[in-house]
Image (cartoon, each protein chain N blue to C red):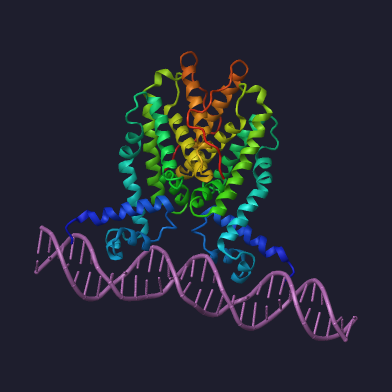
Length: 216
Length: 216
DNA sequence: TATAATTAGGTGATCGTTCAACAAATTAAG
DNA sequence: CTTAATTTGTTGAACGATCACCTAATTATA
């Protein structure tokens, strides 16, 4: 049975993706991936010489499907760009509740687990974050005229991402969306205040911290 | 040498704390803890029947020392409560830079790693978060009169925590404080707007999401 | 002498990984 | 068209290393 060339490979990526999401990278053993995918070890190592190569394939899958999976799914039908942002956050909220807080942001969890030890994973996680921020940035750019003049839409999108990641962390720890909701409510309140400000006032002032360039 | 009763034990907790912080719980092996602490395996299992018991001891240590370590250390000399909040965040920023983004929030990383699989750890992580939020809440309460009437200081403190955790995640991934700074700047901008609002306007409206009680 | 604590050499199980043999599909030769 | 050679993919039993953990003997304290 050598015909379904890529089928075995993609089944491995799919199984690994699910297990890494639920359990993390290190706690997930090769044996478990083999068992749940119904693939033998030799086939796995035919496609992925090391476990880390499989991890890279999973992160590449996320990179290539983040658009389909998150953005369009959660906020495709909403028209107002600002509502799209919070529709996206609500999508994550639904994910939390649907799987009883066992699943969070797959990228975020892997980020903290692997940032120090797996350089290849780190740079792919970085790319995933960039794409996420890109998307939210576009939403804000679409309403740039409603925001205070000179507002950095990308920095604002970054703030949305950090709020989301932090909120997911608390939600999974507390097994409750209470803190998630509280934090997102404050974020919404902030964005609202920016828009209210935008019609009359000027831009928010620049960072107080020491500026530094991004080096990846 | 049985005299220094707690010395062996506390050396184990200290070593485990450091390794869990740098590498995470699962990737840290008992053998490494024994090697770096200079303790034999029998002694470890005399105090901690399982690896998870050692983890619990580490989290209890954080619980009992969070006041000394984080709050007083980073923002003890600052007088204005709002500045204390952002002084605390700056403390984490310094931690990131001092250890070249290898160290983040020890609780946050463990939260994502263990929330699903280790119930005892989860509830202790929860307690640590609570203490952190308590502290920041007190800071906001001290300036409650400057905030819009009816502002939920605890919810605002939660928002600070989520921003911090999310910002640390991005900082460690990007190995840069740029995004950290951008997010914190927006948080500061928000708090400033609340204070500006507080002198004239009313409270921010209630959460849009479905309210839910905290169950731990 | 009773107890608290440490030493150090183990245990079986699981870790990620390897590999020789094999089967199916593709290509090339007759 | 048939057949042989080659490539592509799969099988499943192993490998050594490390995993968390155990325990009998020993030392120190009270």
